[in-house]
Picture (cartoon, rainbow, N blue to C red):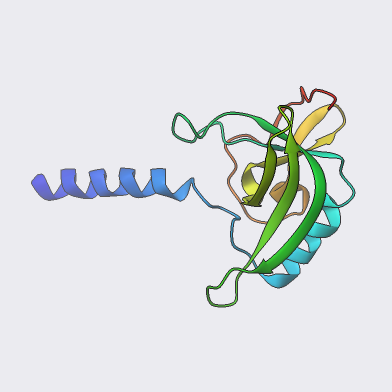
Length: 133
């Protein structure tokens, strides 16, 4: 019985950990496709509704540039968004495409899913409430 409880507890912990970093690291072709899509956008929403408290806030970013770079690990790449938020704070960070949204038909749509990449976002689409800034 103790083994079963241990196995269930371990599976639960691992399933929670799987939620993070779905598409933080990707192939070079995926990174290029993401950059191509994001360069056409004025804003992105960085949002992980199922992440731990403190990491679950919505951050709209006005995009100034989008690039990709080698992640320094095996043959993986990451997408970098630079811009600023509604408070004027500079943003420059590697993004997770599963938790990055673009405006499409008055909704925020998950970038990873829009590019037909395998990912498990907390929400496939969200309400888009981006302020003009």
